[in-house]
Image (tube, rainbow, N blue to C red):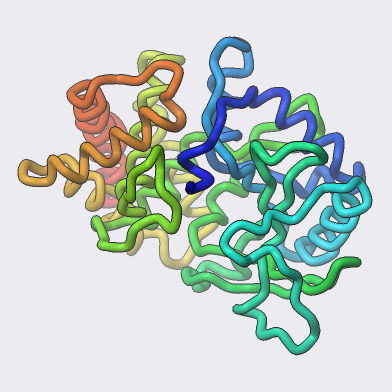
Length: 311
């Protein structure tokens, strides 16, 4: 059974506090939570009845210069507090000095006494040219691990939102932008784990996440999507100062393909991930999710494209 299929509803606030409490205080300022937990906390923190279904809590270590010492300190603190390596898929074994960087396990740890969720340590790329996965070696008390980075994760480092727990969460707008850029087209690659019993294309899962973020943003503030282009422009220019103009045209191509007639099967997959993920507490119909995508294009993507053309 996949870990996604067995994911349970969790309280974003409760999990965020537990993660923060377990991290050495000196390194909390280097932690940015990304993904479902970050979005869940941003949108649901004031309503304890609304929860998210997720198994992985992505902890982004930033800035890059602090990633290795922060990663080592955080991992060793969690090991000392009896957090357990997630062994699913055979990737829970630490390596040694002879293990190639790209064969090292990522630090994925369950909290003591629970297997309902786990944290995963990530970092930001070294430069805007590092768009592919890079593995950084960290040496811990349990052995050698990888601290991976992925190209557009650097956008999550832009103006993160502080929490009362001493760690930050990524902005919904920048998480959406990162997913849009990562998938300029719908690809054939599928998720390694099932989502609620189904195999899903990775691009459909991530573009579905964008639609979920847009839907929640609209519910929180009526004209929220109209504010996204300004934040996108600032974030992209800040994190990709040389190449940002070349990246703008690919922001909307994947989503437009998802919504295009003839791609109903892909849109249905995206809806399935939303209904069993961020939107589990308030699942929209397939048509409503499609309308959300159309508004996202009209209110955010098209104005963003026009801004870039005029700059």
